[in-house]
Length: 196
Image 1 (tube, rainbow, N blue to C red):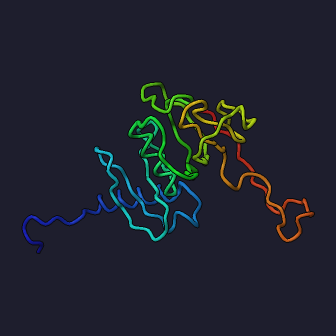
Image 2 (image 1 turned 90 degrees about the vertical axis):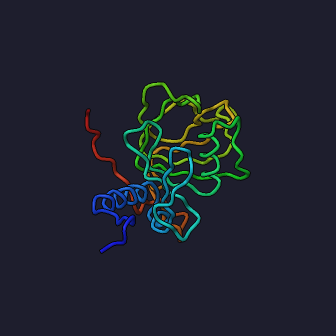
Image 3 (image 1 turned 135 degrees about the vertical axis):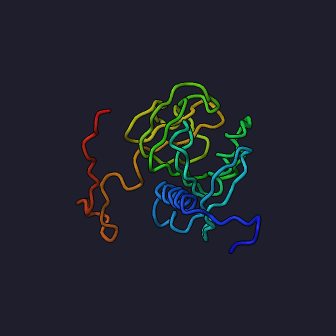
């Protein structure tokens, strides 16, 4: 018998926690997420640890019922950038490039305004991000959404970053032992897109 006032997690709570952790672990490469700390944000924007990790990555389960709250996995600088944008700081404070993975895809309100919280949802496929100031014109990159290749999100704002569609493994991988050998040894193939 449990002492009065002490609660034991119910199987429903344990199941919900397990689902959140599993969803967070799908957000990035397995070799990173398997040892990452899994957290979620409370209503005040504080990080609540769901599972302590052993590497320097932080993964979030997200909430599929909220626009702009996807499953994601960030390194320290990516997390700093994300917390800055959520706090609506005028510019990010990360002092080095960061990486954020969103390999489950996402929804967001805007591709041009980092602080838009009212426009209709824009779906975005699996992607990853290099969090550092990018200028589309200077880099020779587009600044409009696409489902393949790289482009600059939030171009012209302090929060501009490189948005890379797909996963880090999209495309061909070549033999590293013989760089002259340009025959692909692995190719990712997309399935057909289902219509809504």
